[in-house]
Image (cartoon, rainbow, N blue to C red; front, top):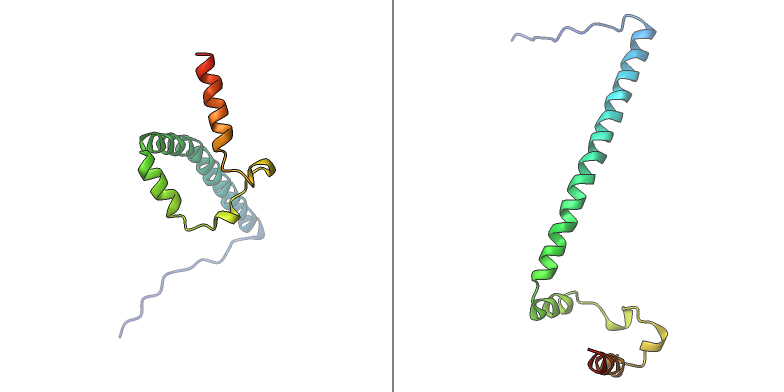
Length: 102
């Protein structure tokens, strides 16, 4: 059996170890900067695609997705004035104002 070993060179000095550490840190900073720049672009595109998908959503699909969240209605936050109301009366009041002032 033949064993082949990679040739390793010990660090020449403490200075070369510091240089290596600094180069590694600079490389990591550059990678982090590139990551942030990438997400600035990708984040905007992701938000745009999400808006397009929501705008294309039908009322039935939206209701199906909402009901599919399997969330206890008691856990959904509502303003104090809406706790005892479905909002239907308020909605009708707004519709009547819109109808009065087209």
